[in-house]
Length: 82
Image (tube, rainbow, N blue to C red; front, side, top):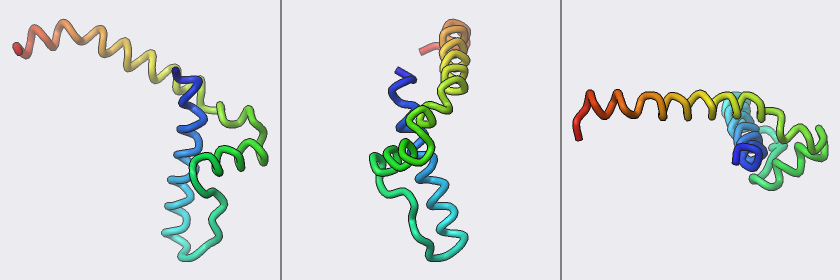
């Protein structure tokens, strides 16, 4: 699942950072426009592989969060009765 969502997350982050840069500088030409436009611009300028640059940290995050959720489920259920 993570391999499918990483390109979308990469594009989202680029759009967010572009918005911050535009706020700070006033009016500037937008490099990225829309989700698919951003993804195609990244693939064209940096190569298709660059859309998956955050895959390894994303998988680490998912393993950590999944492990915490599974490992803490029972103790939390005992501590906080439903």
